Image (cartoon, rainbow, N blue to C red; front, side, top):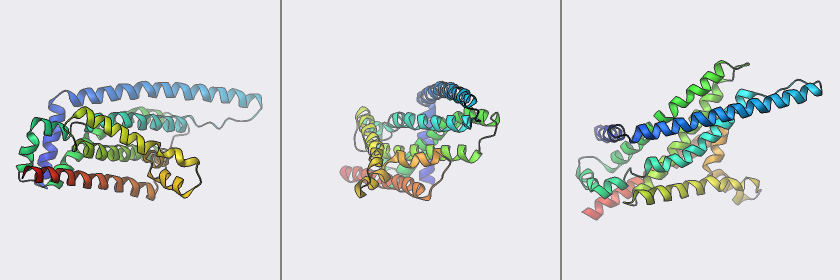
Length: 261
């Protein structure tokens, strides 16, 4: 555990000593704030139109503005996660290999598992720090909405975003361990993430293969969280996904040690 904490502290220090983390977080918050305002304005306009139509027919409008904003915002958040995670993970191992510091790390008294977990937890911590300020937009809206939106829906949405991000970070860390080129790592991570993302197009298929592809899609399970539903099968999927790619990254890092032996 001491080795894991040392790696974690080193990685977090690397993020925040340089301007990388500040630029990354700042850009993410600017984009989320801008699109949140766009979504809110669009949903309010839609609600007003539906209310006018319902008045014409003498029926009350049942359009839930906060719930609609929340679903659209978490949908946007998933798209931003798809684009930001390859950038966040591209240098996790690739930069170390290019600078030659990976050799020093491999000869230090830490295990491959401690190296991989330390780096993964550091990138996940940065991702969580990046997500946290965005909750202020939604909390402000929830507190001022009538009726008040259930907190469970908000918490479930962020739990889903954290699991989705953690899954793609684990995938990106594995890809980064395979190459010394950061750009190649980012492109391959994005392509792989997009591939397991678009497996969800099989939802219209009623075949057994279609059901399997739908289950393997990372976005399919995320949608349950955006509706405030925490499904056990979705939790199993995400934790299994993360564990699989952490295992593969450990094996990849282990192979570096053998190649240098």
